[in-house]
Length: 510
Image 1 (cartoon, rainbow, N blue to C red):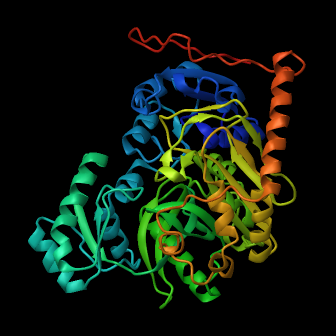
Image 2 (image 1 turned 120 degrees about the horizontal axis):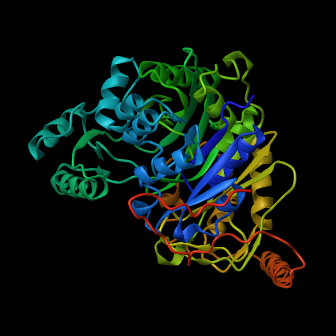
Image 3 (image 1 turned 45 degrees about the horizontal axis):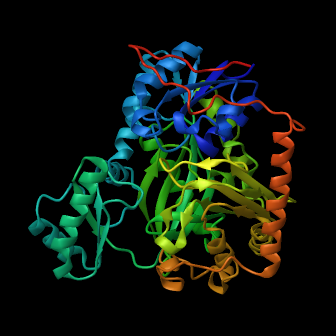
């Protein structure tokens, strides 16, 4: 029997499609929700039912807890999977789902609350014996306190928003005279981004790697790990390239960091998939707790590729109250996997989001290649949401093979009509320091590429591939237009949205 009868996926784009596919493989019916801007999205077409939940802005659609819950009740969903982003780490939503008698596919609200506040997370981890970066355990009360603490732990230091995430509300401070203005700037950004201006300070670990551990827990007291990922290739604290395993961890260090991660999960009675993130000091091999993401991560496919575990399937199983479908002693690392995030961004304009219409698209295929996406030729990329469109993941028997395979897959990738960051990924995969691997850290992009990442689209051969993809896409479009290739048309964005006291369903059932 499947763990649930029907699951509502409270998200959009590639992660919504990923969860819908996982449900279908388990024989679970799915319900999609969509904004008016996403009426033609693939996750809408893929689900068994789909409901419009509001206008394009996420505050009026994907963040409307009340509307999503009403859809779940209307559709008869017995579980809600939040994907990542939006409501995935919202404790109030998790509680509201449970209060409605529906299962939330994620951790308890209490675990979200502890880890959602960076100060309380640090305090909890310290009590559990998890190493943390030296710094304050309470938000800073004044500039004078910040100056005193910074002097005690030594410069450089990092200011961080207590309720932060995604690099918001963070400031590196190298010298004492930079502290006061940096604190004001961090507090202002935190207030604007999270409605919470609390900031704390910690020692800045220079040139660290970003290493995170995939943990998985059930309601039977099992706290497991699926090894680590290295996410050090970042731009302004946003991950762009992830790989598993970390290329520099010795077995003894891997054992230590994964043991600590499961201890962190046990300390908050965690349930489901989560990620414990660490700063790793290349020079000393020390590691320090950074934060815990209480959800499925964007980069979960690299873990799936090296372990053979389907994390979405496992999430659904434990959410239904069953034990984790694997034991720690059964888990092994097989080969090496790398993921790159493909975003609709304009490198020439400081990586500003670049919405538009995809004119032509050809995804790479072949052994060890996976693309998680929800796009198609003719898809109009909306401006209202995160610019990440897809993820390209490759697997190889070892890291060298995986890097070569990623170079091959990127060379086959053709995407026209919008600005994107594929050329950047091609440059990274051909860059000697990345290929060698041991000197990579979170400052890699700034140090080797700088802020100007305007890169050439590549060789004449690659441009020929793009032109071929455009010709193929145009041929397929002509076939669709003449009716030679069938397909179901989805409710268009021009249909009216109405809310007269309660949801009016714009759903369709197959």
